[in-house]
Amino acid sequence: MKKIVKFVIYSICALLAIGCESEEPIVFQGIRIGGKVTRIELSAATISDIGQTSATLSTEALTLDGNLPITQHGHVWSSVNQEPTTSDSKTEFGELTVAGIFITELENLVPNTTYFVRSYVITASGTGYSNQINAFTTSDAPFDVLVINEGNFFSGDGSLSTYQSFTREVNLSAFAAANGFPIGATLQNILPYNNQMYMVTNAPDKLEILDPETLESIDIINAGFENPIGFAAVGTKGYVSNWGDISTAFGPNPDSYITVIDLETNLITGTIDLNSRPQELLAFGDKVYIANEGGSSISVIDTNTDLITDIVTESGPSELILDANEHIWAICTGGFLVEIDPLSGLVVQTIPNVEVSGFDEKMTVSGDGNTIYFLSVASFPSTETKVFEFEITSTTAPSEALIEGENFYGIGIHPASNTLYIGNSNGFISNGEVLLYDTEGNELDDFNTGIGPNGFVFVD
Image 1 (cartoon, rainbow, N blue to C red):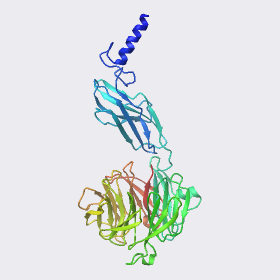
Image 2 (image 1 turned 180 degrees about the horizontal axis):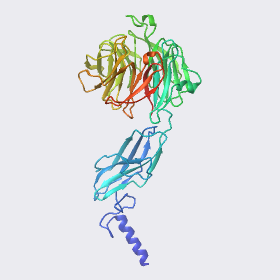
Image 3 (image 1 turned 180 degrees about the vertical axis):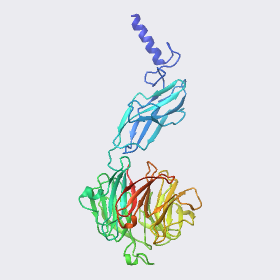
Image 4 (image 1 turned 45 degrees about the vertical axis):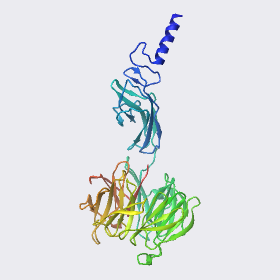
């Protein structure tokens, strides 16, 4: 009877945390620090958005311990150690004073790899870890980079190459390998959207829909286009920019237009006439922005009504990107960078003296949206090319090139590794190559690709 009474007393002491045999409070569901169980309680890490190189970790701090202030907290993870500690990879979020959720965005993971994860806290009494260890496996994607090889116009030799940045494996003819037949056209653009990829080609003119994992052709829309260039989508509506008849496309009265597509049925539902030859498209919110390279404006389509308005710019807006502030930047063939606030529809600033090519400008933006990189091509017959770096907080154009080379034709930046990918066309007389640089301008690597690499799609 005495033993039973003693057990009950100790249990009550522990549950009430009154310290019958210890000066520190004890709660059995809390995490253990310094050999003792504390009041600090962390949920198991929730893992979401698992890609081939990334994942999101989320943990809730359920209860804290007033006697054990938390000076540091975060997540730890490892692909080797099944009980990861702060000696492994970790995030550091500082003091934790209020119960709530903390989130870690993991990047630069290895594809097809299992990672072990748990949460941690650091106190004056030591380090404690969540009671449950979670595991997840990154996806086994065969590639994380798609190279858009334009090919020679009317030669039908455009192609898709793939590159796996971890294994450095290259597939020069990924589309043909997946489908048993080549693209057979000049390849202009590819845009991932809503778990599909939309590929724009001309000669012949078509919009081909691909499976993003296998690159197998799902459907082809091969009517309603004339020299199509760009694609954008909002909701269930797709928009394709068309030069129109090539004989008038570069004149004052082009037959240019936008093709509107129902992406649920892949049927064309209408067209929108333009007054200038268009180039790239950018979707933001419920609007689609059109870079009118043949004029001095950016047209804006309200996708609810398909009515169009214009934002006046300097001559020749060619390509559009969205920055960290959700402002749109246009690079213009006239030698300007133009910043636009899409909420007001007004030009915020215009940067003159930008060294450009004069046609089909190419630019990209860093993963954090703070730095723009663009190409400049010397006048024919020179093959000299440059890459310039521009911070979005700048008010003047860069005067010194970050990278100089020959026959640069396409540019992109890997959002996970922050590596610059530059397509070298080799003058379109043979297969091209892709050069990899860090953002300091140091060359890292290279690999072969198809004819005329004009851009990149980075897949997570």
